[in-house]
Length: 98
Image 1 (cartoon, helix red, strand yellow):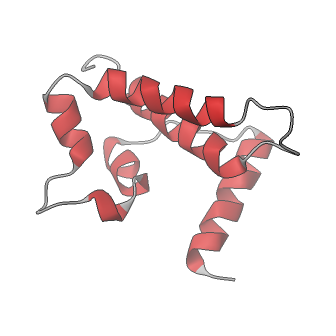
Image 2 (image 1 turned 30 degrees about the vertical axis):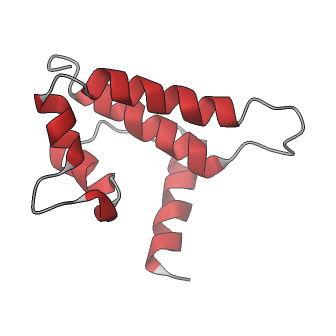
């Protein structure tokens, strides 16, 4: 089992067990996709500093929830649910800054 797959399985178990914990600023950054890093500046920092993080995070939450709305889908996409949780955690962590 690959490292990424193990991490996803661990997150799935935490979600099922209700074992969610508040994450630190650094943990939230690491959870974001590494391919968004550019020259040492992460887009999440630009969004926060530009006072756009709240709108961006809420938009992402809506996008991932909307993709799972159709009854024709057999089941909820766990990956999308993780992304929703990730953006919700960002909003919670930086609630005073967004």
